[in-house]
Structure formats: structure tokens, C-alpha cells
Image (cartoon, rainbow, N blue to C red; front, side, top):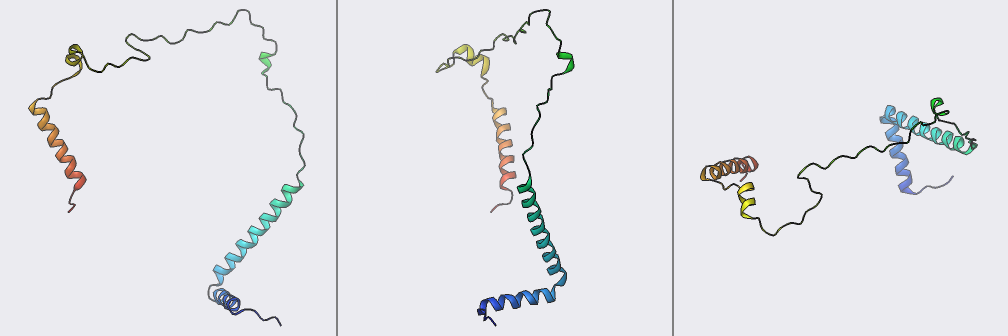
Length: 132
């Protein structure tokens, strides 16, 4: 008889103990392994035995279009119009003019600053919470 190394005999003994103590788990594992091997064999045999098929060219032209002859030339539709005040690109200026400042910028007053401070304090309290 062939003498097996000690670590191999220990592994075999562990496997036998596992099968004896957990029969359903071991049986399920064995069945899954057998199914996987069978599926692999069936897939490999099937993929090796497939012959290339001859593909027929299918005419997918609708029957309505077979006898179509246009009676007018095709007219390209008008593209979207550019709305007034819309520019594709612009050259940025280094500073605003006085007119632009008055049009776009509003100086904050004390009430606005106080509201901003309160909302920031509330946000900080929510983020920090009870952090030490």
C-alpha cells in the first residue's frame, strides 16, 4: 500500500469527519460539484460540435418603399434660431463697468449678513452635532 504524507492524511481525516457530522451539507456540495462538472462537459462538447451556419441575407426594405419615387426635391428644414442676447462665445473683461455693477450686484445689508450668519451657524451645528 502507498504511504501518504502526514498532512494529506490529516486533510482526508478532516474531510471524513466533516462528511460524518454534516451529511446534508456534504451531500449538497458533492451534488453541486457534480452538476458543475456535467455542465462544463456539456458546454464544451456542444461548443466544439457547432458547425458554422450559412446566414441568408434578409431584405428588410419595407414593401411600401419598393416602388417609391419622390415627386419633389428634398428640402432641408430650417435650423433653430439664435435667441436675442445669446452669444456662443465672448471675450471676458477684466473688470465690470459701473453699469454692470449696478445691474448685477446687490450690496448686502446688515439684515442679510445676520441671516447668513444664522443659517451658517445652524449648518455648523448640524454637521458637528455633539462631537467633542
